[in-house]
Length: 269
Image 1 (cartoon, helix red, strand yellow):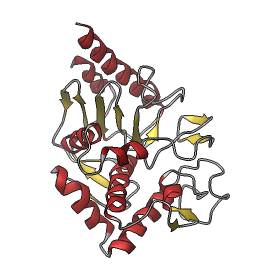
Image 2 (cartoon, rainbow, N blue to C red):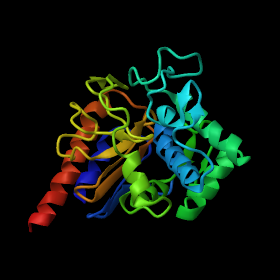
Image 3 (cartoon, rainbow, N blue to C red):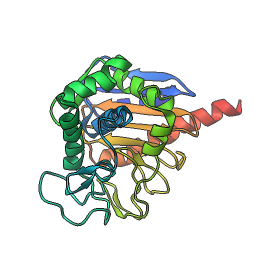
């Protein structure tokens, strides 16, 4: 898919992109291990969902200042980093690394296994991923493009959790909460699932203009992103070593629209 070649113009030393699902293509340096940054939250969220299905934790049990569900949905009232709540739960959507870290800590406490090991056993090993978690469960995974695309395939056709569980995780939690989508601005509402950011009617949005409202995923400060459009049955993943900046606000939506444009053309032929 020639649309992926656009990543060569982004000015990154290392960049790789891939499409899976209804269309398949890869471009760039596919075997280089790169930081996923906040795309890590999707792996962590999936591991928590595995723990929920196993009965290790419950989404509505107390956790932090609220419940596990609040933590995963950035609705706990906690700020971005460690500290006391900024407001009561379910008041506003506040993006919180600390909340995700507390969610992982609960799984660690209940399972008796360090979270990095739990993530490896629940997600990394079953999917055959080559990378590993280094540090925070909110931003610490490192792995190559192959890992990102293998995980994308899992999100298109889940095996680690029941489809109904993933459906719940990619459905808006605590509807109507406003908030700021980091680096993109205030969203009214700022819909979120369980660790998965939801496109819904947000505009402007990093997934572009052609992605369906049901599109979900995450992006990271390391110049990384993954989105899954279940209506188009396609996912796009990108890893780079170029820190997020204003460049991405034009480049990412343009790439996403190019990919979805090609998918639409292929279906029309």
